[in-house]
Image (tube, rainbow, N blue to C red; front, side, top):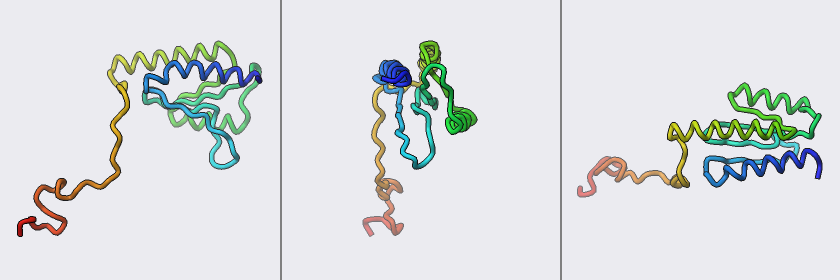
Length: 139
């Protein structure tokens, strides 16, 4: 396994601890040359956007990754560049702080949300006794 792969595995272990709480969604986009480039991990945690780029120790972001990270940061997202255990510890502290704040404010989702129906509401129910032509059903 590459040094960057080891860092990614450590990040996945950390995220796996938060995933059962249903307040974490994350994805590891696969670069295919189409669309916008992204960093290694894209997350939504307790309602906050976060991106993580894993690097081997001693490496830094490429030019495209720097632009992507800067754009995410300018959009008020958090960006972590992690290459060692100190970076993983910083991410853990950040996640604990965010989770504790969300718990204190009562903004955590409990369980799975209800599915949203995409069907249009029934007009009879929406507007009381009128039909779509504006007359009572009895006339």
